Length: 118
Image 1 (tube, helix red, strand yellow):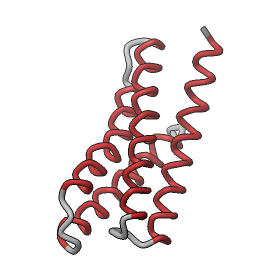
Image 2 (spheres, one colour):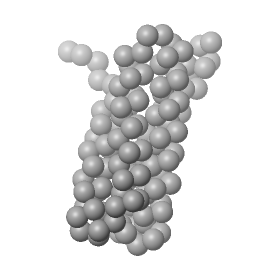
Image 3 (spheres, one colour):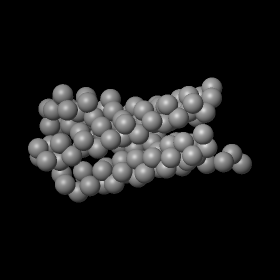
Image 4 (cartoon, helix red, strand yellow):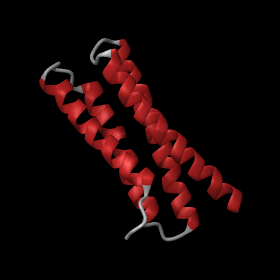
């Protein structure tokens, strides 16, 4: 059985949530600009983690993981802005924010571990 990669799985599940939320914002709330920003950053997290996993070197892995962390921070910003402007409900925002914060903790921990190896 293949080893599970938790950050890979969680970032993919998070991207799916972000895609659905972005679609909801566009179709139901008629909000296009913020939802596009959210979609871009929220799906980029997992894409960069995938690139990190397939990286050519430790340095490449670390660079992509750093980008994933930064995209998670940006997504956190857009979710807070959408919550505070009333586009998404507080409980939905809290759930998404919690998932994003978990991904930030995981990627941050991976980055810290990789830097200690250098």
